[in-house]
Image 1 (spheres, rainbow, N blue to C red):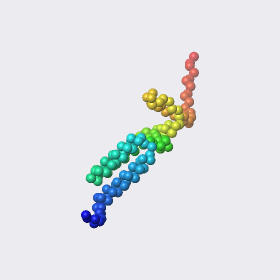
Image 2: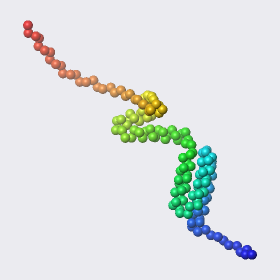
Image 3: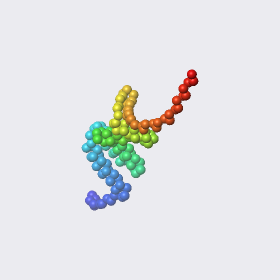
Image 4: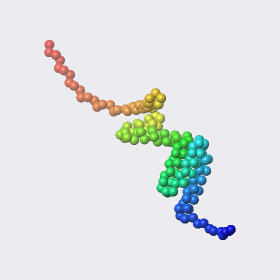
Length: 151
């Protein structure tokens, strides 16, 4: 019986694969800590393991990226992140407007004015009334009175 001991050294691709598997295991552990649906987490783990078997590095990286993106889309968004995203999107609606109209749009999006309607009823109507005081018009030149009628 041959009891000779031998050392096995990993080539560069072998080290890369080992590093990739370690990354998958650690990212799976992080993903397991999130409060996503259990079936989504299990699907992520299965798909990540399947990606690890792909031999072409670019294809494997693409597979892992798509898998993690798909899993991230199942995760809930924190409420404070949601508010910032919604405000950012609301302000982007004002970007295409001319400068004078953009200021009014931003004011409406930030809650100034009145809001009526709903998404269910077909749309939200935001109204902001801005009153401007104009200077009094210059006095009109007086029109001479018509001469008295001849008698």
